[in-house]
Image 1 (tube, rainbow, N blue to C red):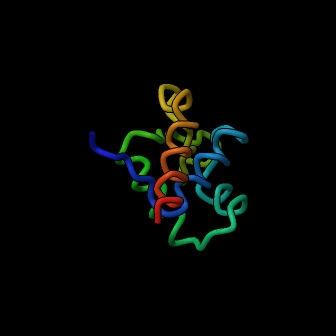
Image 2: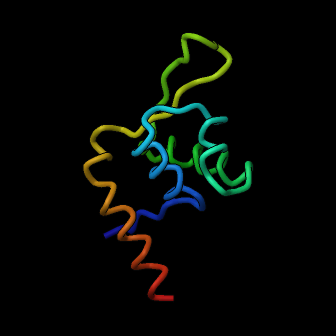
Length: 90
């Protein structure tokens, strides 16, 4: 079975979006204690993996809202537990 590895900062991004709902990149950056580059990379990788989705911000078309895919939201605990297991093995 192929292991699904979260990108650096990915767990923080998922937790913030799970609690706060859809947010812009700027809002995520303000809620997470990680470097800006790490968060940008994490968002990009989570989008590629299908964990995050994006929708247009109708009040400001220069930005988008990121949110958790509803199907992934149910498996969030599994994603986080897997990452914790990997870090404990090291």
